[in-house]
Length: 251
Image: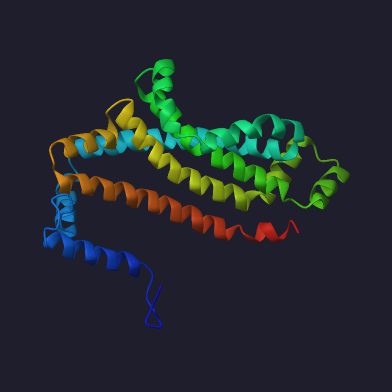
């Protein structure tokens, strides 16, 4: 970030926005926008409470389970679609449809099929994350240099060896990009599921604090959620940058 020609340290924009938030909060512009210092003070009070720890566990478990299934299903599916034209033609219209469709509308259907418990929340989280992982994995495979595949075939590589040692590693930069976006979408999916299917986890805290107009508590939970999503995204971004050299090997 540059200001008047000078390069500012990283995270400077967040600090500037935080200062603006604090000023507006102190001016009491709106009841729904308390000072940032009050929000962090409230976070310090509730972070070790039983309700917060339980909500963090329930949300974390649902999130991790959802992205686990999204990754182990999405990456192989995307690679196979990139390899096999027939499979690609069969699945791509459905993948694009679910990618662009408002998945929130499917939540009532999932509630009917799988009930109001944890299973529906995990499935909803998976559905929010899986489609971008499939599309990115497919795109990565379709950009692989054909000579890599021919070399594997000439050395007698089995389909499993080619799948793991050629397609996966060569498409890894795009795969990690899809996983990164999928993780962010999964955060949205797990909260929506907890609000609509079963009022548990952070969804229960959002419902409780908003209904009682406890705005400092409400924003404290949102900041924790955003911080977790941002941290996961940045960690995956660092990992993606470390494997970018695989992309040059495909050309």
